[in-house]
Length: 444
Image 1 (cartoon, rainbow, N blue to C red):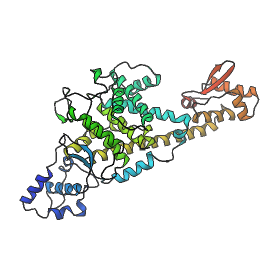
Image 2: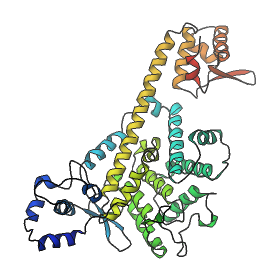
Image 3: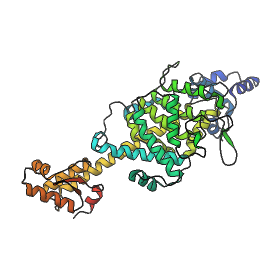
Image 4: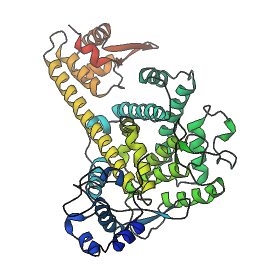
């Protein structure tokens, strides 16, 4: 649990009692803005640093807080005591939002693998599986990636609760793309929760409904330390209605960037903790809904939970820093933007690697003497179009050869395992092997 900052008003009174009257002048100094070495530090981090010359640690914090308070913007979310949550657009938030606008939405240029209908599903399904696995692992699922991927791709039924959690997440994430044009409603939130938790709750009746007063829920650890106590059940209906209004773009006192709105939605559901279980998975699903709703289409191809799981304590601390420092959402927003940036960056890097591998393979294919030039051209096409079907006639026409030459070309490729041959009536059809890239490495 991070150490809570000194209460600002009490700290101000304490400094004034000590006749520290030049505090305001100090607070307005350019070098004492809301950041410390370009970082938005919480008191729990600041207290381990040496303050600037002439300042005590408390006075340094007071100056930082003074500069932050002047720039904070309130949002409709309130804590259990009716105090609003706030945030400020501190550096590097504008730069990260700009990068996301350029790299995850609009009319960004993407390689053919993402835009080509024949190949994009491979990346889409791969990202859904990754998000389903890691989001479930964050909530305690113990199944390995290999087993989970095999289950989803093979379409087999889950064998235990962990596998059920992962399959539920996969189906939920897949549905977000279909729901992105719908407004968020309480019933839709309940539907998402039912799908996320189907077959995984000790009390099946708890799926798709608010927790009750007698179901006391707190966020804590195995040693009994409580980190967060959500609002009482009696407030949940009103709070969910306000959350849906916010998610659907209800006007605010100042403009809220769509990405920030999506991040706050993630925090809001997690803060309210309206369900007995499955709140984290539902919150992350709503974040994806919101990003897709605001046309950040590349978010269908990334996994934020994959990044979060690499350092889950940072994810938890982002929540705690916000709650312990006057409901300052800036901590959670900065953390989430970093996660998003890394997830988008990893996808772009992966696409670049795969594109380069494909180019290299096609280059090597041109020099492969085991195949003739017609076969090399077909395999090169198959690498880019894994769902393509070929026939003797299509190959004959493409290369202006006789039927027997086309037949020998395709049957030879099937014999080598590069194509899969199937017969429909009297006609043969050929499709690229599922592991075509690996088989090409061993061809001789």
